[in-house]
Image (cartoon, rainbow, N blue to C red; front, side):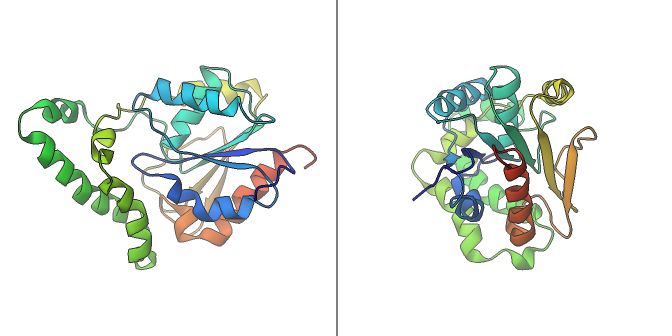
Length: 237
């Protein structure tokens, strides 16, 4: 059961991930917030942002958006380009500088025989990239790896990943949000994160010893930090 004590929180996962990434964060926030884990289905970034806006329209109050990695792109687009009213944004390991699948992936996907090879390559490549996102792979259990990899094995999942556009660079939009001062923005990054975009104008909490998934490698500290930031952005905090 979810309680709406301090306003809703919407969690946005990163590239090729699912709501599985938020399982511990959602459980921690659920006693005091209505928690909505947004599962992206739209391959186009603008469409994903519009879908997020539509889903947030059903909430009882403007939410705090908590994004991870490329999920932060959807959050920024929804607020900056579509005017989604929010109480704040917590950007966990944000990747906002226009990275993503190279254009040739979409071309190869259309060539006879390449689709199956690409699908097989995504599964192998995902596991390799996922391991590289961790500072300490000794903490990466088979259970956690399977939790991230299993959704990719579902029918049609790989095709949806391959259909994703290259992410837009939204640093300028975020700078506009921060400069306006109407929406509190904070970042949480791992000390050894090689992928996150540096955000000098955003208040940032560094999680010692973590890589690109601080909520997995250092869950207690990261979840406590996210909870504190969300509470500061919530009514009555």
